Image (cartoon, rainbow, N blue to C red; front, top):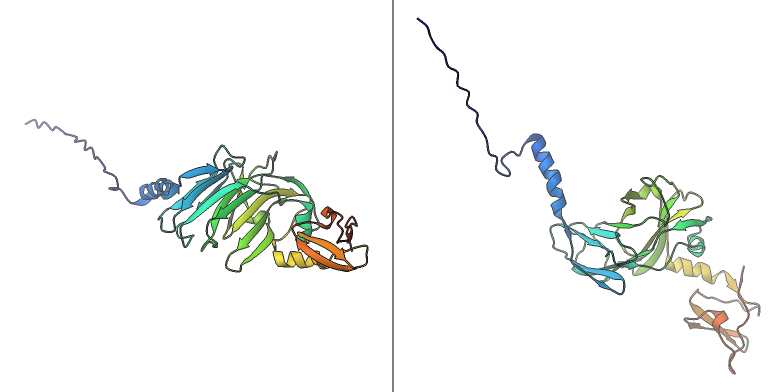
Length: 274
């Protein structure tokens, strides 16, 4: 008796709905892909060359404020992680005043020089606050720089910030170990608002440095005297005038800018650094 055997192969097609395979490598890959959706780019306006947007204190995503392509610091950005600000704040991102210069180095008591610098970036908040946890800034590399992944150990970031909790301003420098490079921008974290500028120094700065603006002013006051022999206490933003051999100080002007008057002695005399 001949027995005929037929084998039937059934092909089962499984249609997987989103989330049905949440184990092993699939789950990991899904998580990595969805991570990009946890970043929200905030709506912005451009005003006086600054990119302005509102960061919400209660948003459940990282909030990204990116400088407009219409500004001089195009591509610069700041990322606020969840809960980094205690209250809603209007944040502005724009080009700041130069801080990478020899005077800034002197104020930090650094014997060095600047060989190249990028655009300074000013980050401001409408509220006088510090961040409750660090946020990430991305600012331009020094102009003309061709750093590959930031290999140059002389790369630094100078900063001039306001620590709201202390009601004081500070100047300082982040050194190479505190920086990373991504897409031609320098990345670092901070809890404070202010002005930041990437630069290349002639020699390596081995460790971070920070000094209060009060300490800088005291050092300036101790370094200046005048040819009259009158010893003065001054800061860089004060105006000195002498009447009857005594020194009086008025805000806003330097001594070389004072004109002759009938009341005050001429201040064409120049200051001498001790």
